[in-house]
Length: 314
Image (cartoon, rainbow, N blue to C red):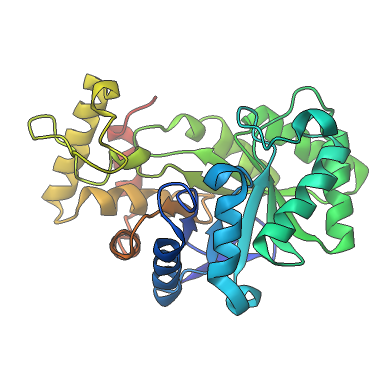
């Protein structure tokens, strides 16, 4: 699988990454090992997790164990400081973007992952209570110490990305190289906010929820029985008429060209600048292989524009 620069850095990742949010939560270790092994067999070298995944640390622990000695040849990304899910040590350490919190969180993640460095350490959510200068300086310390190779952000707005970029340059410290945001053909808000800021400041974008939590897998139809198991089982009542219409329009576009909705959903993201890698989760080897096969679809620039026009804006 072709590797790409993550932003303007010398960190190279496969254009399709494995999202590890299911590890330790919806699948056990044996299933996790199968998913990881399949990803490796398919050529994926980029694994994205977070300290909060898997009921406070389960995902990091399982990922580290599943990768084992192969870890040195792979790119591990994890996150700290989710604004609505607590790791349990939040209050004692202060704000989520504070130096004290970051110093503690990195040590816990390194321990759980069974490694002495993290390739990409991402701030999971903005922390309005901590000056971004303090957060960036704390992360810079980790880079200088060799505990972290690169840093990134998640769920930042375009304005917050721009602010962090300016401050990193002014202070002469390690800048963010990536932005991980919700982006799919059913949620394209980042196109007008995050994407321009990422381009201006040299960040690679890492879309999460590229399949809109399963709605773009091709398993959902307005006039067909709803899936009775899996992540879609309890979502039927929350799907809007506008979403159904967008799914139908995208399915028709794909069918007319001999493609599947899954191919279109992953392919358009991978072909959108400045996306570096599409973060797709999986709970089975079959899902990994399906995502890898879908990644092979390479839409033209005109087709990319057409698909974003067909997709849903919110």
